[in-house]
Image (cartoon, rainbow, N blue to C red; front, side, top):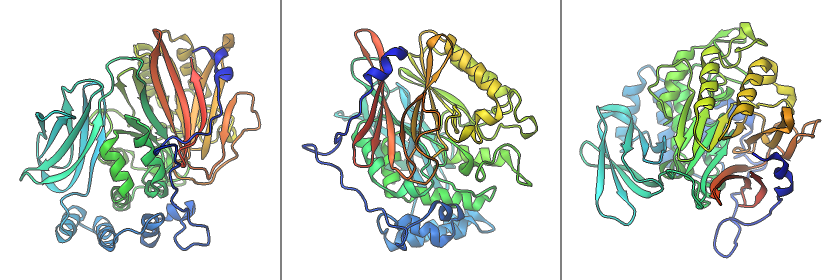
Length: 492
């Protein structure tokens, strides 16, 4: 990166970015606090049936049949025999799926298609190149309730349509996607990014529609996304995922834009929780990891490692996604490796060192820097030594531009973290997918802060990667719910 060029090239743009003729997207009305439909963050964390139905209906009243199905499904999932009970609820409602299709694990030559079925079955995924009639059929290996079918051998930078069918040939869902490019070109490769849906945001339409309309080929959803403070209550965790699956706008996004995910504290257990023990209660880490891998469609779903971290290559981008919750060691807090654990720390540094991608996106559930909330529940209060080791690996990296991603502290912010020799490492924290309250937009020390968007705002971000005159370029943009580009930062 050329940090000297960042601030002069930084632009503040207020443009419409969707619609025809510059028309601004109409916003769904956000209920006021006095409106009975309004759901506060505190209520979302409580998540009673009545509250969850209000979340479902907050931005648009859903059909009574959908509401009744959720109520019956939640009762089934929290009962004594959840798999048999939810299968019976689906039969009674005439539903062949509990969730999906959800795309994930996008590469230049393939994608994975996830389905959650009421009963174990095999599925076929029929993939057709747009504008062509010939199709490829990808089959699941065995009859399972949760399937993730890898569709490999596709062409780079190419758009495909697909249909998922069960063993009887009945259609279960459909959508489309575009593979990543094999390498950088003048045509931008765009990835969306954000955190902190907190259940409520999964039902508001504008941001998820804009991600699709603006052309992102994948979306990184990095923490506090679908489950809110369920601890180790497997029934309620699965009920929260059912609520996610029943959101029409989420269904549309996940079926057409591959999603990569990581967890944070509210997905994991509850506020500021991590590791194996929290507030006098033990945490079943293995159980939480197992259900997380089943309910999302990440790469390395079957990897036998202690954590839900992974690395994947999307064309010109290596995405290194860290697990900053389940590997923490309370008894070692403040010491080296207490935040990621020694195994994950060594793995992370190795992935950065060995990457040959022009760009690396390196994610942390909570913030890398300490400018907001004094590093609360993050690197600065856990493992400053380990953070410095990673930063030194980034400083020494040649041939790749490393960008830090983070979440947790509601609002959206960018930082240029100063490093020795006049270098900078850039961090983008966009925790505005759910419009929830949090700290101020700016820290007391603004010397490294590029921008700040307050909590209770609605926005997502996107990165566009391209090659211009043989030089790799990346551009960050922050987009609000009206399609206005609030921030544009060129990283050269």
